[in-house]
Length: 274
Image (cartoon, rainbow, N blue to C red; front, side):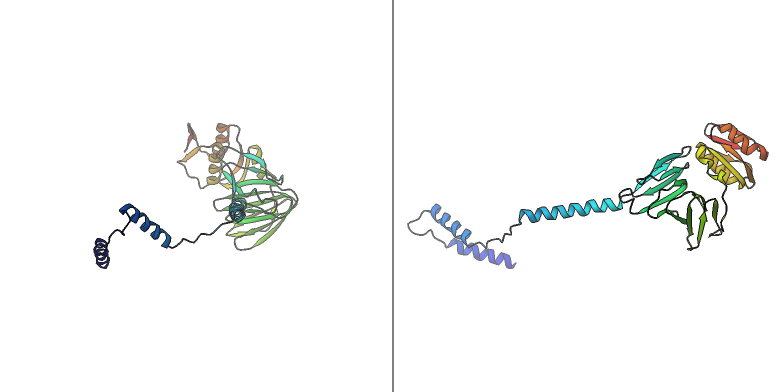
């Protein structure tokens, strides 16, 4: 309402305006426009020096690059039925078992040799700064050595084959292993060092050995190595001591199930055991 009153007063005042004597309407209008323009408040302008703007842009670019440089991680994984051997940026060698995965940052690897593992892997570490393997159940720290780490479900095992390693569980219990020693997680605590079984790392050549292993875990290994599904219609509560190789599925099934008095039927990628 207040704005309307102002507009009404403006219209009333404008109606009484007259063109100055001696000037046409067009000339009077041009003079009015010039006066209005001269009395407008001037907008303040700031000059951004080109070198300053370039510097700001360069700084922002460096920050973005540094973010991805420091935080970008690389993931290497293997599906069922496949093993993979490769080298890290420091020439340390890793062999991944089937259905396994590691994550690490290749950008600053030499300064921070830490990786995360799911599944099983064999490591041959070159001499250098501390080398750390992290899992959800424990971690392994070395400088230069060869060792095997297995983390699947609730099982965590470490075998040292050269040099020495320090193994720590989630309760900060630490076990030091020398070459030829082994530890595993039992009741959420690492066991004392025992003699490592070198057969445990023959999985790299496709050979799998078991001693009093739960049949369920053997079945899971068969599924993992051959990329199959096994339907157990018989009980899987027993234990198994024996061996299988990944060269031939039918032979592997015979070696596992026949000694246990179980029969099986192959239906494509599905195996029915009863």
